[in-house]
Each structure stands twice: as C-alpha cells, then as structure tokens.
Length: 166
Image (cartoon, rainbow, N blue to C red; front, side):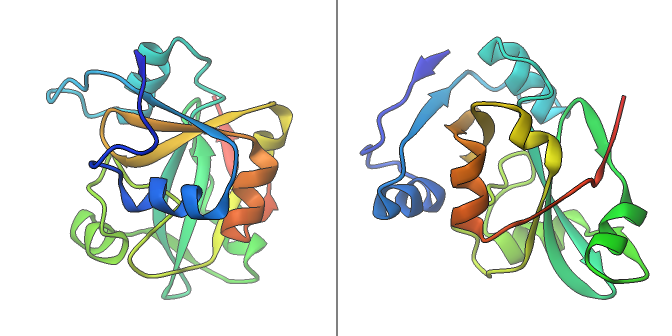
C-alpha cells in the first residue's frame, strides 16, 4: 500500500472534487488483482483495515429513481431498508452498464464523489462509528480515507440503517 499524490495528473473526478472542496483526506493506492471480484474486501485486506471501515458504493434504483448507497464491505445492502429510508416501496441493484454509464466509473471503482450525474446518496449509519472511512477514489486500487462527517456533508447524504451486517 502506498499513499498516492493528491495532485497527480491521473487524478480522478473524485479526487478533483475533494481538492476543490478543500476537505482533509488521504489517498491510498494498492496493486489491484484483476482476477478479484470482491473489490471492497480486496481494498480492506491490502490496506490492512477492518472491512467495516471500507464502504462499497452501489447504484440502486429506488422506485425507478437512481440512488447511490454506501454500505460497509463487511455487510450487505438491505434493499427494503433503503427503500423505506427513501420513503419508497421498491429498491433494486442497477446493472453494470447502467452503473458505469450513470457514474462514469468502472464497477469496483465507483466513487460517491464526482459522479457524472448527481443522485441522492444514502450512507449506512455505521460509517459514523469510525474516525475515518474508506471509499473508492474512482478506479480499482485507489481509495479515499475521509472523516465520515465530511463524506456525509460533501455528498449531502442521508444517514440511515441500510446495511445487513454479517
């Protein structure tokens, strides 16, 4: 694991958003294994942090409207809880093509910051149990470490119990 430069010419839209906002954060990089499909678990392992501190960014359709949900990789998204939190009846995971088109990021690298189209964000309340959390920085193998309060503020997120923890 290395600490990546925040001013690199390879800065993702997510990193540019954070730099413009003047928010304190750290950028961590690791060698992503292309054979891995459990991107969040890989990040936790390679960064040497708890899987309940690394949050996966999921694109969800809630009553047909896109919503970004952030849940710890140690658990799973509770679709009914998310729908309820949004005052809706039904929630379902968006497909890979829809997620990549809407966010501008590859699956496994979807960041809650700098998405192509702004949508409502819901963060699982367990994020607030940590001094910092990790979210994707816009590509596989690059993570943002940020205070959860700053994550919520910058994404204008709703905080709710939306994760079913293992």
